[in-house]
Length: 177
Image 1 (spheres, one colour):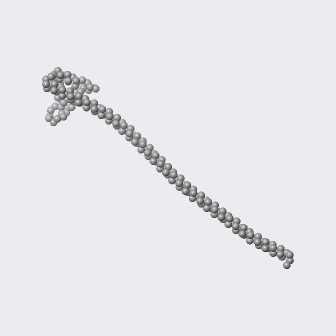
Image 2 (cartoon, helix red, strand yellow):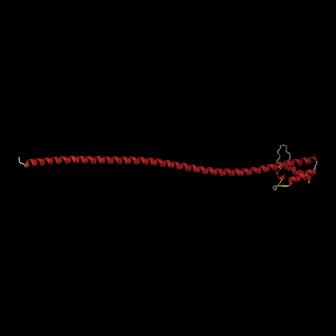
Image 3 (spheres, one colour):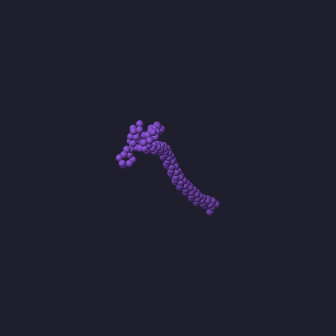
């Protein structure tokens, strides 16, 4: 054995050790890269699922917002409809109030005309012609554009086939004047 042989052995052994060490290092680097790749993949997968959950939550919130907006729009439309109905009803109330006032005025004039008519008839039947003419004059006077005699009923209110108040008035008027 020469001196070179131990050197060769030691160099061969060193080479052998170096080759095996590199393989271990290569395996550990590959393992490390594999772990990093798996961790990165898991992080990407986690980020994807979180984004999906956020999207779902956002969609739900948007749907609720759309639903709320639709509800508000429906309420506003109902409110506008109700305002329109209130305006129509107020107009109807005004019309009915005016009409009822007209009817009340007409009824008052009819009552006054009938009261005067009965007084005219009573005065005529009793032969008090001067009083009868005075009362007839009251019926002939204009009351808001029309004489009170125009408010006398033209149909008989009884079933006795007698004159209506307007016909009886005309009969008395012709007899007195």
